[in-house]
Length: 384
Image (cartoon, rainbow, N blue to C red; front, side, top):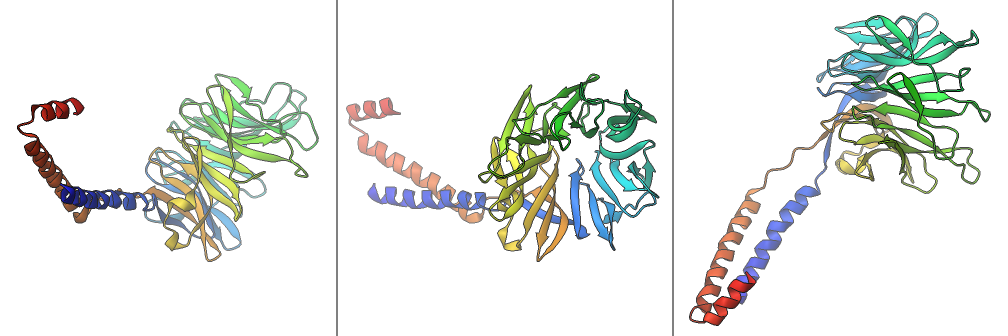
């Protein structure tokens, strides 16, 4: 019996050890989707990625179609950037024109300016765009305002109550047409800002945690908003902010990784997972916010490859992440994909099979030794 127990223990250790090694494998694989000196800002449900890449001394919006990174050009100026892409592959971004900046959409190989706008920051699957456009306020002044654009109609979303002289900007839009963004408010010098949620014709101030600069960057289909929330100044710091999530009427600080460290969340999927960046002892790094935990994305890829992941800007419901990673001093737009779960190896299957066999043999030996002793059998069944 002792010999059987020793053999069982040995194979139990072998069987348990193999799954632990599998769990220690990288959780994400990294795919370069842009040329040298590029950044990724969003990834859609098809795994297509958008961002910006260096073209000479300029920066151009690009689109990764799953095979190639395509320079989608500009509206006539030097620079452009693609901020978001919907699940149909339509892109929203901002481009220089002959003298100004303008929001654009890109679909079917054609870049189209969104008339009357100065930026386009997001687009939902219905093709509704949000960003910033110039409108007149109540005093006849031209002021930047958050907008929605659909079927040729540009709608002014206004700004927060009591701040008509100040600007607002739409940064994210969900499938219900709710918009999350940032609005300037009157108060201390320096144009303090507040995050807002626009829903059913009403712009709601989401508040802050005592600081003067807060921004909302994205919203999911559940109405959850993420961004950076202002905190009270610490020591000699003029301001500080942390990543936040706004859900169910509550604004929650997602924290940071170091004392007094800054953090921000730039996108959130419909599973409640958010991505962004946070200060570390080695500098600012890309992070994943999930289940109340902040995790460095670098810790979820194979360290042998030598990448540092500087920023993460987009995440879809398949857990794919649009990020910017650097190696040997050069940064690239990348996509992170969940690594496939490894199949159990032959050693594991053999160990598991022998474990079952030996457990059965030990159990039968135990029963034979208890035969003839009714008291022993009764006690055995009682414990079972």
